[in-house]
Length: 345
Image (cartoon, rainbow, N blue to C red):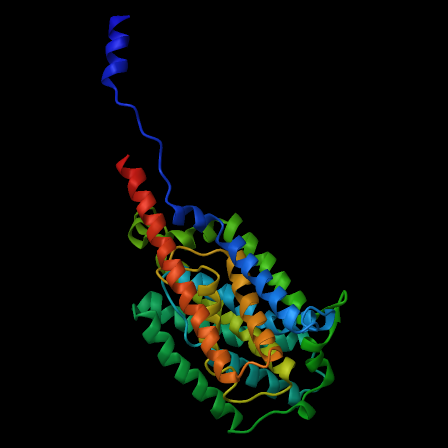
């Protein structure tokens, strides 16, 4: 009895684990982003009653579909502490090749045109992955160099000429303008890809390994994860999605040009950052990426309706991106501090 009493006195009481406010906020980041989108929508609706009309909402989701598709692929790349600056050029290259093929073979099945674009993108993605994973070149350097190479190939293949709507069969243009179950095909394709990614990231071993590589590459290697294989995979997936987006882009705008999607990679990266994906790697959710893309689409749609100058539109978008980066940095510090406190306790 006495020994039990002494043990009870000798053992210090373990203090409850403390959690920082920012660490708690990080758990509901997507909910806060959704609330921000709702607030902006209500404000714009009060200024312009046509904003939340069915037609405008459909247009907004349609215009955001391609960005959402690309942002999912970029999320995987950023999670592994990488970056892909070549996706805009891949869009142009795959779109140009697909447009030239359908302009020659007018009866080509649109599904085959989509597969062709994806194949071109996958080849480009494999080259990116090889330089990053096998050769060991920094992602920003490798993809920047290939961005110029792919863009030059797009101009070379096109001979500096455009391919316009009258050269494309109606079946090809209908890829982006047609509807399935009452929804635009672009929205349907984006939903299918979203569901596939959700399962892949959350319910497969490879999906978990991608996060492990981004969180701590050394620990991932020690635990038996093939980092080279994972990096090759994520850049290949990104290339395939860029190739698909090239076909969808050309079909949507009924025009293929060498400078298609120039600079669009920065918009995709910005959408990921707005969605809470850490450029330091190891962190990011599909729901956040989708909301980040939606916020970008909302701003692109709402600011012109409010008669905001195009010059101010860029400034406003840049300010929102900067705020998101600062917020994500503060949240990450809060989470790291919370983890440190837990380890000390």
